[in-house]
Length: 200
Image (cartoon, rainbow, N blue to C red; front, side):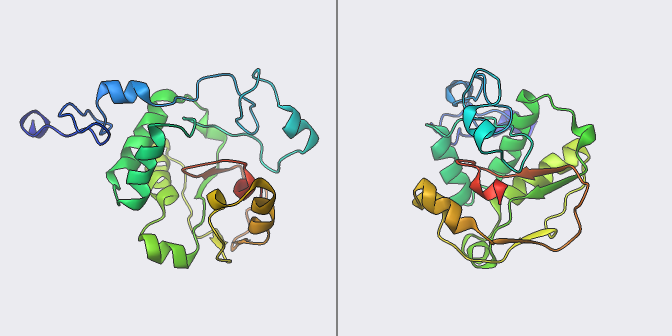
């Protein structure tokens, strides 16, 4: 009822026709959906089979599921979310995930958000991956543990570094505080580029 009285503005174009995802339909359609065939392991564009990079440099994770490519206007949306404290977008991202992705969640034992160092957490005020993970955990009925893995080293943001430096930058930055052996774990992050953080 309130939605009929007080229309919500689209966070991208500011029109008064935003729906449940905080976006109007034209902006929703404009998002860079990651629908093309992709490598099932790292998520990069391929013919749907494991890419050459994963065949030659086997990652330490089994699969990647990405909803979008990092392109306009998604980049603007993520900037709003992370740097303007638009926390309501966590719900929008999670809802878009469930709208578009049909996965078997039964095999997942635990959800862990990509850890954030305490210094950066204090600077930003929240862990953007954790906020999305909370909603996915609740809706998929999968246990969430944001204390099982901690970021113990404060490093420059990955996005500011060239590829080779990213690998060096991430060495030894995480520490597991619990025994996770034998568990199938879904690690949730807002952006994945080279997969270096996940691999570490």
